[in-house]
Image 1 (tube, one colour):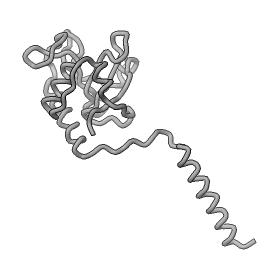
Image 2 (cartoon, rainbow, N blue to C red; image 1 turned 90 degrees about the vertical axis):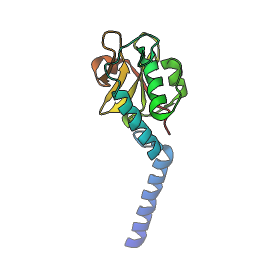
Image 3 (cartoon, rainbow, N blue to C red; image 1 turned 30 degrees about the vertical axis):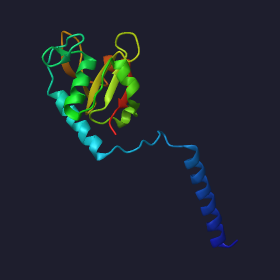
Length: 165
């Protein structure tokens, strides 16, 4: 048998297999569209602004620093002040307005959603990097950071989403 012909046949088979695998989606997780540099900068601005509000009081229905914040009020305030993006309503309505991202691909400024009250998307926070998020937790602790992998929040995690490019 001719070595070159054998090599061409083997290479053809290899390329055929690779094409088939690529076409059928053999990847362990789907590729995500890269986010723009502009959205990454906005995300950093959002995260930094959220961190500047640590220790503010929690107030049910609160939407600003003068009154305090609830979880969705904090997110609304931070997004508007840091990036000029209007997000209004409850955590659930914010979840509907945002698009899903793979939790492994979270970037600063992305939103993280939880079931903390026995119904879907009842709590929202802002991812700030390194597995941490800022949120208006409750009247006892106010605005604080927590880890996504903490026992409490990992058990209640529902989705990672973004409204940034």
